[in-house]
Amino acid sequence: MSTFANLTLIAISSMLVNNFVMAKFMGCCPFLGVSGKIKTATGMGVAVTFVMAMASVFTWMVQTWLLAPLGLDYLRTIAFILVIAALVQFVEMIIQKFSPALYDSLGVYLPLITTNCAVLGVAILNIENNYTLLQSLTNGLFGGLGFLLAIVLMAGIRERLENANIPQALRGFPITLIAAGLMAIAFLGFSGMIK
Amino acid sequence: MKRSKALTILRNGLLDENPTFRLVMGMCPTLAITTSVANGFGMGMAATFVLIFSNLFISMLRNFIPSKVRIPAYVVIIATFVTMAELFLEAYAYSLYESLGVFIPLIVVNCIILARAEAFASKNTPLYSALDGLAMGLGFTGALVIISAIREILGSGTILGFHLFGANFQPALMVSSAPGGFITLGLILGFINWMTNRKGGNKE
Image 1: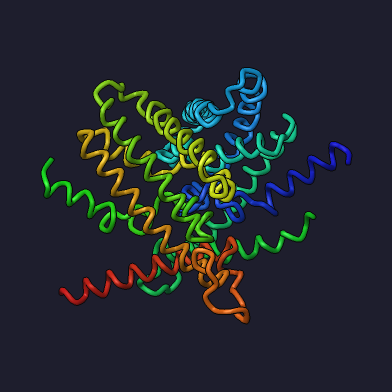
Image 2 (image 1 turned 180 degrees about the vertical axis):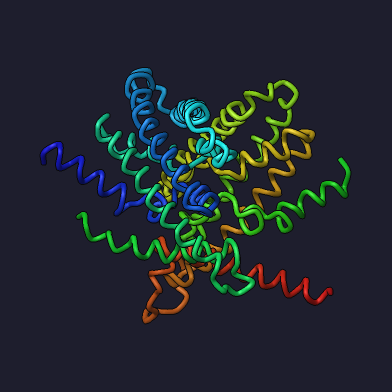
């Protein structure tokens, strides 16, 4: 299989078929917490996409050039989370400088990207699947785009839900989770696309 | 250690501030690995271990960690204990290690653990903090066991691997697949809200 075909396959797989939120349950906290408005959801999604792509590259380098040659594989979790924390700090500084409005609306959620499972998850999955640098970048970038897609769709649904007549007990988190479940069923439709 | 404060901490973790059902935190493992009771219990115990020791050590170091770098410092402490739990499971419970897979290292980014470090361990003495870790961990484990019991019974017709309904039972595969996780948890949370509202209504 040519390199390009292989990369396309990884891209479709991580964005749609094995969508991080809908199929792997990674990144559920921001997905449920920041999906109230389309605008903030888009900002969060873009920030996560950027961090996931960058984290894929940097953690791949750390693993291949530092941990593997020195036989320090058992330090992977600690090393990766430090790389990710540094990256997030960096992204936070950039957003603060170039888009204070976005910074204000994302506010407390930016540091939370550090504790987004999808970021650490994609880094670990890249290593477990023995991906090359290019494959890791593809997986991270399109995994992030899949997250962006899911969180924006969810925010669209939730903006409509605000005006809907929902039974008292189901308001808030329960109806959000049920809506997410129905969305996940839609995403199951992609599962025949690969293999 | 005062008995009343200890009891309050236990009660908060198990019921009043149950991390899963009340605070709705740590959703990723809650949804992902609750397909069988064994997985749910294993994940709960691993998280409890990490919670107790990360709370204990963060509390002991709370006066030495500068507040500007506290989050990275907490994360490193948590990651250390997660690595220990990961190596332990790989050595002594390999099948559990296999089925939990990537979600064991992902305990590091479980919001519950960092939230307890920030909200409790950084302000309280080591003994109370360890107890808070235990209570929150058991509350999390209990929630995982409840969710995974529902999903295992409906989704594969078994409990802890034993078949319940005989050979003719058609399991609702939907419940153990990804969408079923979201919907099951949504309905459980709705049920808890309904119970709470009803109780509140009676008091008035």
